[in-house]
Amino acid sequence: MISIVIPVLNEGATIRQVIKTVKKTSRKIEIIVVDDNSTDNTVEEAMKEQVRVITSSQRGKGISMREGMMAAKYDIVAYVDGDILTYPDNIVELLTDPIEKGEADFVKSYFERQAGRVTQLVAKPLLSILYPELSHFQQPLSGMIAARKSFLSNIHFENDYGVDIGLLIDMHQAGARIVEANIGKVENAMQTWEQLSKMSREVSRTILKKAENIPQENLETLGNINVIREQMEYSILESIDKLQKMVIFNLDQVIFRGDYLEWAAIAFDEEESIEQIMSSDSDQATKLQYAAQLLEGRNIAELLEIADSIPLVSGIREIVRELKKRGYACGLITDGYDTIARHIKNKLGMDFVFANELHMVHSVATGEFSAAHYFMKGNQYCKSNIFSYIQRQYGIHPQNIIYVGNPEKDQELLTKAGIGVAFCPQPCNGAVEKVADKIIYGLSLHLLLEIAPASRRPIKLPAISKRQAKRIGVGSLVSLAGASLLYFAYRQLKKKNGGIEEKCKTVNKVA
Image (cartoon, rainbow, N blue to C red; front, side, top):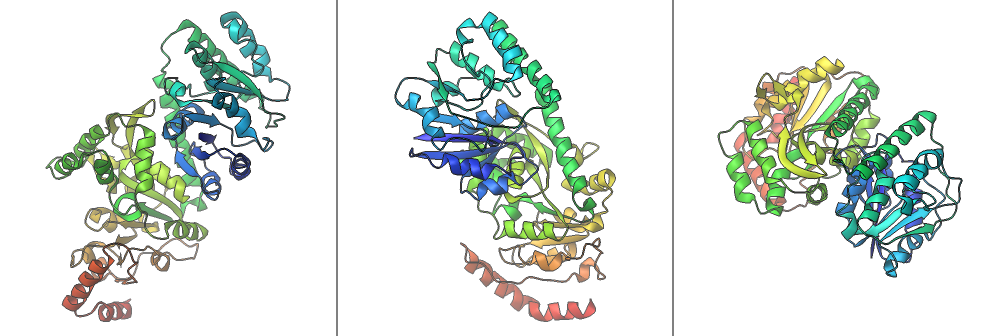
């Protein structure tokens, strides 16, 4: 049984064909696509092939490779690139047969192509001096490899162009049996001179670093990668429909049918601890710090597996797709952590995320977190500060923002948004009318499409006040667990208020 890991970045045009080729194997396999925060349709295309897709916690191929290995369920792990369309149909067998036969612990591929300039001018000369026993490998920088997970778990993955040569050296030093496998003719895009220059520096640095046995972690590099990722994500925002219109969904209690931290607490047997934290008198930032401590030592694969197990609100992918057709930028906001939010953003095809940072080292949670600067005003933490940040940073007035949130926890956000949509409020909660412009009852967001105008003109505030807010979306209750209870509560609310339908007609006349 074999786990196939495919690290990808903006490979929407090729990923499906790569997956289809891998599936031609006769071996029992699982396929894990690790998305490095792509800005194209890579995730959407990969999901069409019914494979597991996870989002890397930080930008960089090395981190994606390591996190794919963490998520792998089988002892043999093979890696293939997501941008090569000329793999042979038996690529899996070529990479893994030597391991399955007990002849090797690590397989390094080579292919029919003239060795690259960095290989010839940098990698091989350095290997011949520092690691002469490795100098015979024809393509030491090849990224198509396979290995036993027991070896990979103890290997450091560089997070730049040095990752492939670093794995080869580390496997050698760990005493792994290494063989080369010919995978035929492979064609990939030629690198620019700028890319070759960067590759040359990073490959040589890795080889020298391994040889000198100096500390491998470079926090400055990881920090710079993270900053670049965030800047890229914000630039995406600016490129979508000139940011005239925006829909922001609360991740917890709206997209997720529940709260991520509560689900994680159940999975890690910390229910009592999380309940004590969230019910304490501490401010929100302090609560989130204590909650982060409960995740200490958990790796990214464990954290994302929980996220993937949480039911999503009905039809959300189709709703996001339609909203984007109508000219809306769509994104998530959460008091929770960026690694989870980005993963769900990518799965749903959304555009941006506003979240706090969960500190990770080697893809393992440290128990620390940093509050997002856009949630802070002075020393005070509040998610509603996001509106002033968006207006200041991107010139989008709050009146052009639709916010979809939990009416019990998001009152300030619902009040400040141009259109505040309260989703699935608790029965008999009359206070929601004071903060929300629209109310959606039931467990589906499809009625949001009746709220978001298809016109490309900026959203205008409704003519009525929030106290006169129109109630919409009594809607059908989907057949989920607890739906009958919600319906009974709704009937009780209807009786108490003299009939929701009659009140809607009255408000409609006013509007």
